[in-house]
Image 1 (tube, one colour):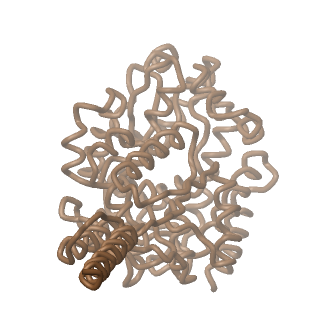
Image 2: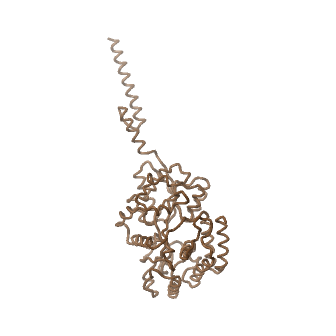
Image 3: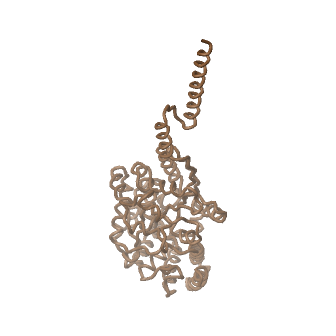
Length: 442
């Protein structure tokens, strides 16, 4: 009897230990399963949900852009609880000053908002990953036109994914235009007609515009004359006749002298874009990219309209520009996860209801259609203008070459010196060619 009791107790002890062992195993795998099959299924589910991932993302912009970008990030994190995204954002100048040392230290963020003027430099330095490997997998490009994607291609690699399309435009106040005696700005008008309208504004006590960004509009002017700012292969300048430089910057100089455009010092002293003469109703309009139209209206009490930039051969001058790119750093250890976020940004309808085209007209045809009823009247005006520009423009060509940032700085400084009469356009043309060709390696 005693022996039987001992045997029974021994068997109970074995079963109890086995049960304890089962509990420990369940705790390790995160489940309360009793059989091997269920444990295996739980392991598979854990793998499918993904390990915890932390991504750093950097961008530049104004406060409204920061705000909605954070909302998109929060939406993505809600849908992907295993992903944490750390934001890094700044103004334009501060952004590039911060990015440069990060690149030198091989510590770039996983996802980098990249500009046309810098993408070649970072790509050729081996600091950006080729995104080609992610197309059709992590990034769904089935509803995106090939020529839209091509805007981020350098040589044989894709180093930036286009976030939206932009076109150069003039955003003007119709009421002030009428006040200075002009009914409307025609679809096309010459540079002489532009200066005549500007003089009418100055005579009436208004600025006509607040100037033209030197590199952007000089390139536009060159394109109208069958040339480009840069050679297609980035090996040098894309124009041979320095008279083109002289002619364009003489116009810029005359605009300032006529007080139709504010001096560079005046613009530099503004506290922010909200103090711009156009926003305050002291100017007719502003030359800028199409996606900036909505921000202008949001800041101002006035209503604005679209017009094209001036000059003959408008179609040769105009082009659709990637508003900006998302690139993935070569040093990122989470490239696939970073690519998945880019896919979400360009293809998710709910995300784009938050973005609403601030970074350019959405590249996905499906997204464009789905958010049509959600955009404001101002945003719809942007969509309409870009659609018109698509039919009335020529291809952009290759992205700016490495060193473009230095060249832009040179050109901006020279434009300011010309405006103040510190240097003649002829002297500036010669100096610029020498400096630019040196920067480009010639």
